Length: 176
Image (cartoon, rainbow, N blue to C red; front, side, top):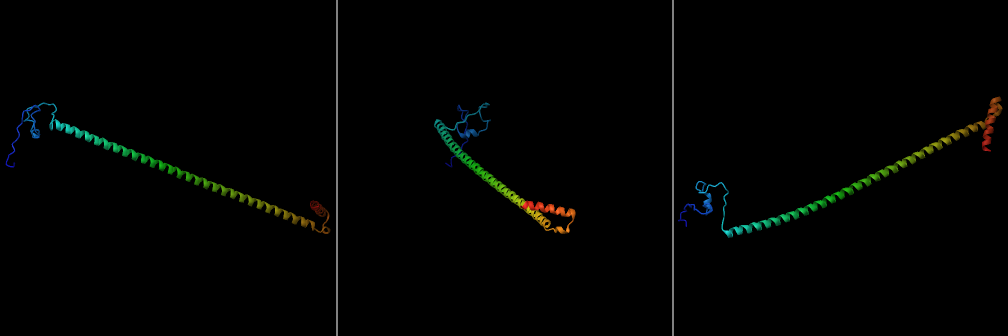
């Protein structure tokens, strides 16, 4: 086998453009007898070979279709999972917003309660101030009336005596 020399293959003149083996494809176009501008067709084998190629191609297409189907199924599952996660996040955000709103309402209620308490205390303070002012005015009036009642009329003359007598009568009228 090693002693056999490889002889360059000679182009044969077959009907398929002079190509019988793969080595015929390597020849330059100058060696070619057919210089047509049309597309050249190359065949790799006989009828059984093309049936095998067709079967292999169909199997490959079936495998590719199955892989695409699995990929589509996987993508749909991932999409559903993402939609579920998005829905969960939206629900979580709504719950958070609701809690925040409830907290704001609670704070506003507390602020209003404190404001009402402040106003109540301020009203009490004003009432106490008013009572104290009335008590002071009443004390001052009682002190004045006491002085009027304790005036020694013997030391007074004319108008002064009449003034104090009139006030003493008014004081006595209120009490009796």
